[in-house]
Image 1 (cartoon, rainbow over the protein chains, first blue to last red):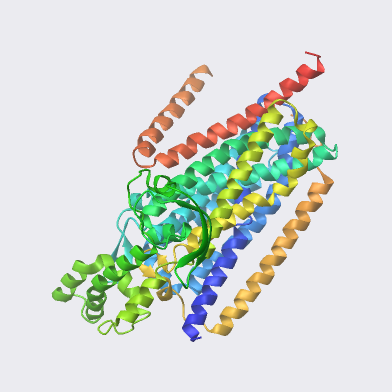
Image 2 (tube, rainbow over the protein chains, first blue to last red):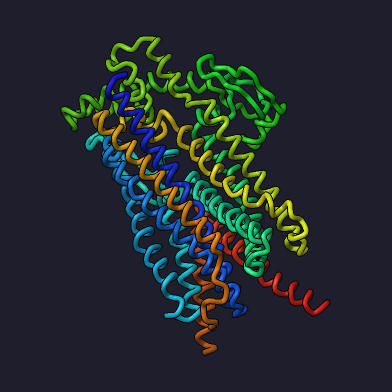
Length: 512
Length: 62
């Protein structure tokens, strides 16, 4: 394999690995902060010590998770510079602002209030402490908001324009950037997925205590609050997932074709593949089970809109590559003579398809002599890894519905005070704790692998975004990250299990 | 004290109206997140308080 290709693959692996490790910590932080705020609200309004004990106990577990989440998140920001320097140069004007605000939110707002939350119990009134807890919750979710706005720009670029004079994307509208439909739906979907994670985590551990008749007062209340918190959040996650699918389906038809393993464009309404074994090489499903006529209304909200399959997406890509070639050729002239009016006019006439010609350049370095085989290879590359995306999507959706079912039954039993009589409900609760994590990781695989071969969809191909690092450096740093992050997870698991086994210090804190 | 409280509620309602106008126009999902989160937190809190009431009723044999 050529060095550049190896570096590209290793850079992608490194970012994927660090992002997936990081996202093992993030969802619990996003959700637990608001669950802690709910518990503290009851403490402040009723004055019952048990709720303070709950906040302190769950807060301890939150603190372990939060510290490791921050540590794993830091390296991702540095990777934009070290491994993706071409990407950073190209979109830095757009990407830099939300990334900087995210850093400020996470490190200044969130971390300051986290400190006050943990060490301020005896130094401020109950009302003030409650306000601090809400600020921690708001800070952690707002910091997620900004990084998701940045990510959404990569999925569906809004609010920026390529400037041939500077050879990079420049921000044209900050409001378009933050209010893009993709950013909105993605933020709400991700944030509320965190709520479900926290609900499953607290319900699982509380169920484990209740089974063993330990810390019953704390466990009963925590279980009740967690399942109520979770059941409404689950409904929200599924609704927003549907909205995000609708938005992404329009913005990224290649991702939609991959999610649904749709190789051929068929007349509407088309069926939904419940199970399929897609073959990327043969561009067909080796086996599938369909629900007839379901997919069209699911993703288009109509019965007669055509959903483009992979074949249509590839055809469209070839058209756009051909249209984008004059833009890239004009850029080559403009790089030597930035004010050349003919080149500028040629660029402006074709700039909407520039990204497709840049993608083609990987397969045909000389854009004046592109062969039909080059077009075919480049068009094939427009379709992301269908088997991985198809199955990741189904794992996420299935996990989401299983959690909704569990939380629905648990809420019903808890509201009727019958949880302790339904021991099976408590027995499965701890086993369901990994489910939201699996769903979150699978969701990110769909989002990020589904965007390939682009870093900025339709504008900047991934192959042009990578730094010129050596293979040795990439292998060494990837191995280092995997080892260190695995150690972080082992530390988190050890500390969590230690504190869970020990349980809360009920009544240890003086009552206000 | 009562005047301060009225002023506080007035400011909260102004901020809410501002959010509705600003977010309602362009950021409907963001606004839904604000409303939804407040609702989820309050429902969870109410669930906890309700459990206390249920336990108390059980204890009193009602």
